[in-house]
Structure formats: structure tokens, C-alpha cells
Amino acid sequence: MTTPHDTSAQTAQRIDAMEMTKHRRTPAPDTPQTRAYIRLLEEVSNFQHALVQANPTADASDELIAKLASVRETLEQAAVPEAERLYARGELSGGEMQVLMPPLTVEHVDDHEFRAHTVAGEFAMGMNQAMHGGVVSVLFDTAMGRLAMGTEMLSARTAYLTTQYRNITPIGERLDLTATVDTVEGHKKFISGQLWHGDTLCAEADSLFVAVKPGQQ
Image (cartoon, rainbow, N blue to C red; front, top):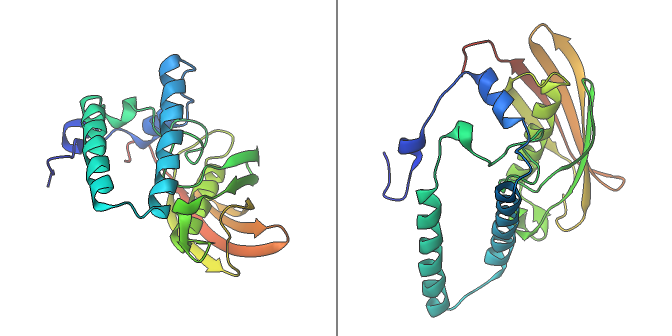
């Protein structure tokens, strides 16, 4: 059901997965619009971190609600179909063009190995200065998914991903994320990953990614 503030029905668009992957993994053009959009996402991320730390008064909350409603209406007027959006564009869906997860800085990626690092803010916290377990899994899914695409940027879907939590994953400190292709069986890639805080293993995961066939969503 479409809510009064949901424009998805008007902009819904399903196309061939390979075509969508080609679009999404192509970096957005370096234009004033793109640069401004990146700054907008940075401010949204800063807002999220500030929001979870604040206990505003009722009057302050009401004032913020009115301002946010105005901002939302501006964005709704600019809504476009998925294949035309700037959001999550680029070689890595977990980079600076998104606010779903702490942005990853990629150090290396090829057909066999992926390495990146990140620093998570307060919005990613579960409790007691530890990263939420779901965010940890999203980091793994993003890294492993990028590795599954390889140097040819082939479209692939997550078949399963299992995360084992070994130690607390801290926020506000550098975390190193690695992923490795363990086995390839036809259109299937079995990938494992590890998340480190210095010499401490925070979590590890194993997964299966399956290549998308032409015509699939």
C-alpha cells in the first residue's frame, strides 16, 4: 500500500538485473549536481548521528518535524525511477553515495580478494559503544557482493550469508574488512570474510553468491 509520503509507486521500475548493475556500478558524472548530492548525503549522515545522541524537548522536536516535513516534500518533488537515481551509484554500493551503512574505503579488489576499511558513527551503534550486529552483516554483504562481481562487474545475488560474532565491534575506531573467494562452482561463488579491529577479530562470515542470468530481476 502506498502511504501519503511514499513516492515509490510513481517511480517503481524493474529492468534486467544486468542493465541495472551496469547503471548502478557506473560512477555518477562529476557535475555540480553530483557534488552537491554527495554533500547532502554527508549532512544526512551527520544528522543521523546527531539524532540518536539527542534528547530534544517537545518544542524542539515539533520544530524539527516541521523542518523535516518541508525537506521531505522538496525531495518528493525530485523523485525519479531507480535507474535514474544518483543514490548508491559507483563501483561500490557501500561508498559515499549511500547512508545505509558506514561508508567503506576500498583499498584493493580483484577477482579473488577484497580489502577495505571504515569508521562507524553513533548511528551504527547497537548498545554500549558496540556496532549493531545487523550493520556488521550489511558490511559483509556489501564487501562480498562487490567481490562476487569481480573485475568484470557481473551481477550477482546473495544466496546466503552467515555471520559469526567473535568480539565486540567498536564504533568510532578504524575497522578493516577483508573478503576472499574460496570456491567457484559454475555460476556460484563461495566467499568468506573477516572484520578486524587492529589484531582483534570482531566477526567473520561465509556466503554464497549466484550470478544473475539475462532477463532476471
